[in-house]
Length: 322
Image 1 (cartoon, rainbow, N blue to C red):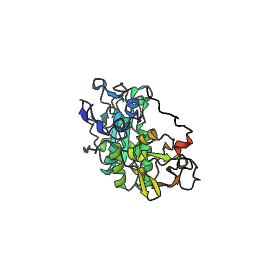
Image 2: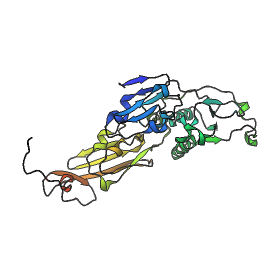
Image 3: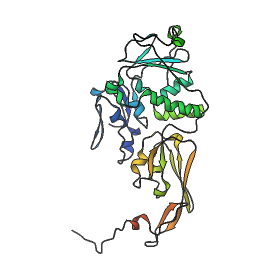
Image 4: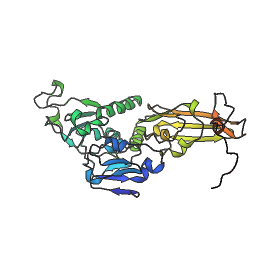
């Protein structure tokens, strides 16, 4: 799959996939989200079978670096400040609804783009997600809860989830006849990726992010591999003479966990999103055995031996040539 390609349902920017950035990547987001097996993890990497793709779009919001996009994303028309959606398996409901393949494929980016266009109320009607093959991913309600937490932290109003009228049930009195008064006015959302969602969230005034990793400074050796691999620049390595710092800016993190996969010390773990900037400082010290210079976390007692000498490995006494 060289570079960029498109199928009838999906476009793929292979250059953004974390599996192209490092062999240690263990991301399975698209594989785990796909209900048809169009995505599969093979020993030599990811495989995509366009013939098995049904265009549900669940892999798009699941992809951390934003390598995937629907070739024709569904239009999400706003009616005033309200978006009314139903999945394609949902029963008929009262009022005008926009049908989409799956409600759980509505990403943070699309919700935020619509929010900036005036979205304040979201009404949804779904089928039986518990028995649907598409129902095993992060539900839209959970995604909306995390997004609302970020909006409230920025001092912005949240998106209200509306009760919808179902067949054989009357809508609550405060909503009776409400949808019949709305006149749809189509509006489009922006790029449907996690990086786009973070940019939109920053424009609202939120300094934190939606995804994050946490750092156990005591385990960190200051190798800076995580900083070199991070595709979004969420981790930086800063040097100033004999001191250095590992800077984590989680407002840039998309949750690809490539840094977690690359850390052989287990110093990084997926964690909850947090605002602000985290900096871990390191000092240089000298190994008492081999005299090599290595780093240790500031505020922690420096070990006498460097990481290599601490392994206890011994060099061979002679060179063996076959």
